[in-house]
Every structure is written in C-alpha cells, then in structure tokens.
Length: 59
Image (cartoon, rainbow, N blue to C red; front, side, top):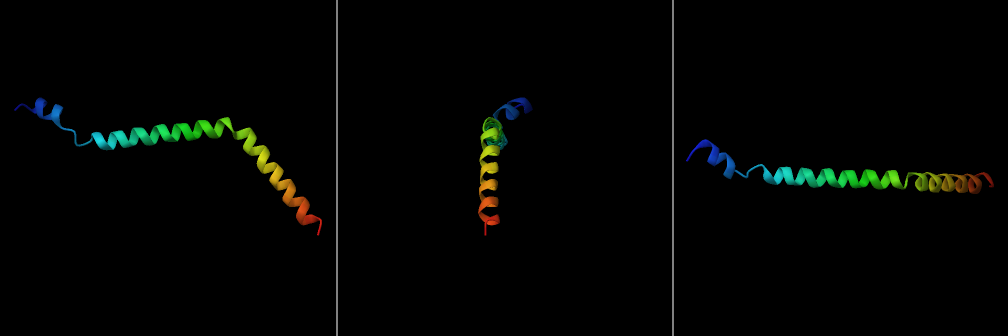
C-alpha cells in the first residue's frame, strides 16, 4: 500500500476538525445575535440601571 493511499484513508483528525467547525459556526451565530440585539440590550440595561437608582436613592 502506498503512502498516498494510507494518507487518503486516514481519518484520525476528522472528528477534531468537525468539532472545531461546529464551534466556529456557533461562535459566529452568537456574535451575530449579539450584534443584532445590541441596541435593545443596551436600552434594557439602561432602564434597569435607572430603575435601581431611583428605587435606592428614594430611601
């Protein structure tokens, strides 16, 4: 069996590559979602901060 045939049949690193591709796709999806909702998240945290400040400063 030639070295090229053995190399073509070797699948030892395929699983690690597949898992890394899945992780990269998940990271890209999370980043895209955070960018899409960044304005809404910022506004929500601003509102929470204002509410907490008004509730604690009124005592």
